[in-house]
Length: 193
Image 1: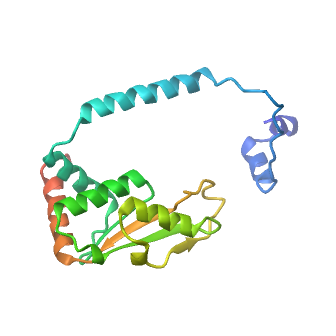
Image 2: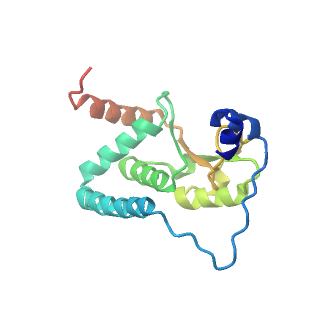
Image 3: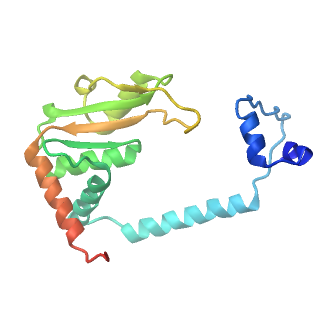
């Protein structure tokens, strides 16, 4: 901001000029603590309140609600191509929920369940596969070769420590059953358009 004012140019111009300059924040003095901004504190309080409201509204889902929730999750995050059930996400809670839903709704041959990790280079692959194996209940011996992505710092700075997990179950019958649920769900509500 100071450079832009001093040179009387736009902040966006300065941003372009200095984007390759490494930034090292000055070390804080021992014992020095920044007081949280009141807006930040209010936001944190509101998030906590809304979580309580959410838990109250959802409660303990019925069997029917559990089926609908898993169907909606797959509709958003699963593949639609016929022949295999493939679900991918970086959120362990969503992956855990999907695996539970898949196992409870369908008769699954556990030996045919597969997983694969999408992980940025520089992150610990063994730790990521251990993590996703524990999350999915799929043994590491059933993991396929990981996809190692080279992070592009111009697109994103944060990287998921454990990457993204793909859960794969090659069974056309199960996939078609899931897609039947998805179609039933999406056609059950009269939506505009």
